[in-house]
Amino acid sequence: MTQTFMVVAVLRDDTNPAEFAALRNDEEKQLELLRSAGRIGAHYISRARGATFLEVIAADEQEVADTLASLPFGRFFDADVYPTAPPDAAELAHRARTATA
Image (tube, helix red, strand yellow):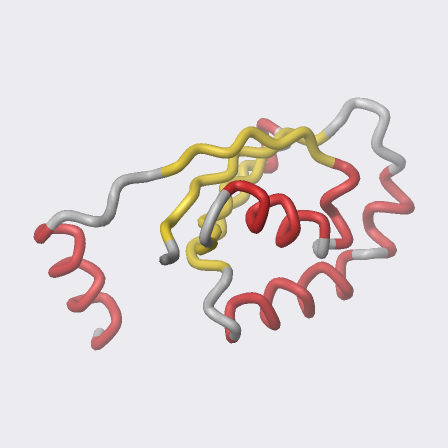
């Protein structure tokens, strides 16, 4: 059974900007691969705070860790994983509206 997790990840202070930038295309390709496999949902970035918010669909926290480890940017972030409750009726309706818009 799969569930949804929200990952809140903060960029480490010791991140090498050049190394980070060099992996950007690889990160985007891997995110798209994971999206198409149904393992990643929403993804938001807060550049001002050096943080990213990533919805991960997985069976458990170990599978979340495996998904995060597959991301080239994973080593640059400290991540906290939060299991989330299934979406309620209002959220499902919102998703249906935005998917067809």
